[in-house]
Length: 157
Image (cartoon, rainbow, N blue to C red; front, side, top):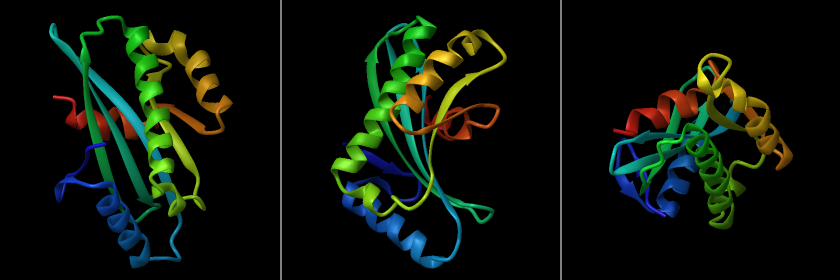
């Protein structure tokens, strides 16, 4: 899996893990949240999915990392939202397999979804939120899902 840091560029999972550990050690008494969010951008040729891992020191900043994946063009919004959700959950599983989540296990995990009460995605809320909560994570939707709608979105172009 290729992980990117906005500060250091492409890095390994072990380097990302070391950066996360360093960030937490700067203020071990702080409250943290772990956020995963995925967004996508579709062109005629392909759809680019970006999944972000954000370690938020509540009230005191954050560090984030992201991955990019290209797929064949997916013009159907429902399919894209389902794929975004699938990629967020798969990202969590990959991080667990690589041991990164052992560092983060004591803090709440939120999956930020690029859906909300406004717009076409409102019909998907119950289904997608139900899917995320069924596998044991807290689902966050717009306007509070900045992990998908702001952080991941920033790298979809």
